[in-house]
Length: 125
Image 1 (tube, one colour):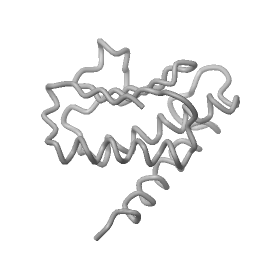
Image 2: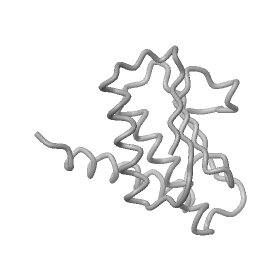
Image 3: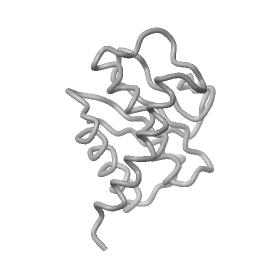
Image 4: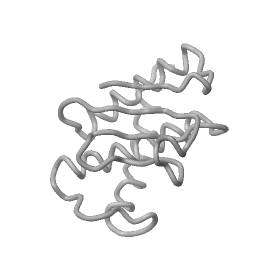
């Protein structure tokens, strides 16, 4: 796993550690096979993001727009896009991903919420 963080996000070391731990938790839980990348970015345009996040089909790469977003919301977007990665890896991601509704989006939304809850429950304290 490679995690890329734009400097302009100003995450502190604890937030960076939490993001890395959550991404590894998602990779184990979904599961994700092989190498993959997650980019947490400060601007949409250079990364081809038109909403809050995207998954590059066939590239095992997620990009999440983070500027002025709570870390929990950013991590939910990471889990959503990593669910698309899992869908791609098992061969059920065919054609373009709709922005809203449909099997792929509904599964990614549900799984993202589930992963956030399971991760929170797994944390000590």
